[in-house]
Image (cartoon, rainbow, N blue to C red; front, side, top):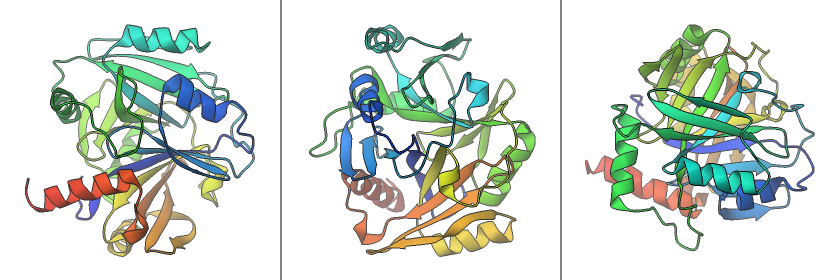
Length: 298
C-alpha cells in the first residue's frame, strides 16, 4: 500500500448474530483459530501473523446465509500448504466443502459454518509470482510465527492470506479502492482485481454479488475489513477529499484507539483503526514490531 500511514490488515470482523451457540467452537475447534482474548459479546481469534479474526455477537444476524460464493459480500480465505489434510480434518468435523475450484494458479474450497457464512481455504501454486505469495513462501521457510501465550495455528494453515470481495462492477470498486484508500491494484487473476493489503494479504475484487446501499452502521453488514493505520486523522481527510463515504460516527476508546468506517460503491464496509498505546494485544505488539522494522528499513 503506497499511501503513507497504511500498514496492513488488522482484522476481519464477522457479525454471526446474538447467539454464540456452536459458532465460536466452529472457528476455534474446526477451523483451528486460537483465541487471543474474549469479552461478553466479542471473541478475538488469531488468524496468523499479526492478524485478528473478530466474532461480534452484539447484533441480530444480518445475513440469511450464503448459498454460494457469489452470494457472499466478503469471504476470508486461509492459506493452506496441505489441501488434503485441511479437507480431511474439516470433513471429519462434519464440514465438507460446499464449493471447490482448481485452476493453474490455485486450488480453493469453501465450507459453510453454523452461522451460514462461508470460509475459504486455498493452496497457491509454489511458482506464483504474486508478491504476497512469494513473501508467504519466504516466511514459511523461516518457520512458524509464534505469539507469546497463544496456541499455534494448525500445522496445515499459515494465515488468513486473502479476502474475497464480490462486486457487480469490479472495475469501479477496484478504482475506488486504489484512488480513495490507496489499496494498490497489483495484479489481475481472470476477471478479478487483486489489491495489496500489506506484505502478506491481498483483497480480491471478484465479479458477483449485488450493489447495496451504504449502511448507516457497521453492524448492518455481516462482515467488515479493518486496516491498521498510523496518522488516522490525516488518512481520513485524504479519503474524504477523494470521495469516501463514511459509515457511522468516529469511534474512540480510552488509550488512543480510533476507528473510522467507510462504504465502498458496492455497499461493503472497510475501516481504518489506529491502536494507540491501548493496542496491547499480542498481535498488536507483533504489528508494532514489524512497523518499527519497516521504519528502520529492515
